[in-house]
Image 1 (tube, rainbow, N blue to C red):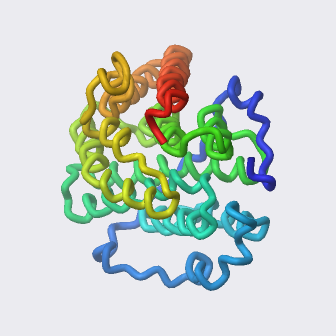
Image 2 (image 1 turned 30 degrees about the horizontal axis):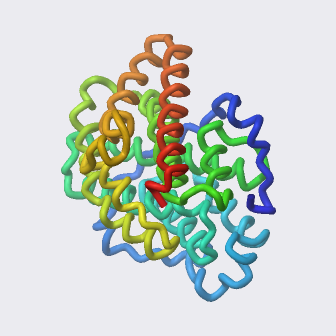
Length: 304
């Protein structure tokens, strides 16, 4: 476990969700995101100072302090503020090869693609899309901040950090657990927080397709930065390119990305309708069921 950030894992596994910050958004889309250059010294030049920011293959105390700054959002953050922070956090972790960074390495690509879709108006309600980018990411940033401070993130995020620190656990299992934590626990509450309605359903599933589209990009980054070959499992997770005979009966259904997102959409409705306890039960059960499947695949050395 990262020596800087002791997490009481036994408490996390049964813990309740942390209250999440609601993120505001208001600024209009800027000129093409893909032509923007981030100039803030706070977020760049990691290559020059990375030796001070690493302690072996984890971030140092100084690195943690810099990362904590990145977890704090300004008032009225834009999607560009979000990308800058996710990208910078991913870079800090990557420079140290700290496995806590596997998730932001993937999340950077997802955020980038959604911003591109907003700019190109591939989504009908671009204001809603901006809102989901900001609020959804703020929940990851809050849980990271809690973990870095040695406090308790949600049970799902705490489990990810526990697995990532465990050398006996495959990195593929760890990073998929992080994705599942974000999709099962954070997503339905984010949808509620930004006022999602049934009118946003088409845009919601368009965003899901965009995430699938960039899967090869973050598979390659996981291989490059963390020597992790997650291709088979992630292709199965996002594309359904597997068969139960290879991974075990009903694996395809249990570990289906679109199935998980559909459940999150339905849990949004339960939360809005005052059935939060039902939604929380669904979320808790889904998370641990999926982790159980991943644990079995890991123990069988089917995933690396």
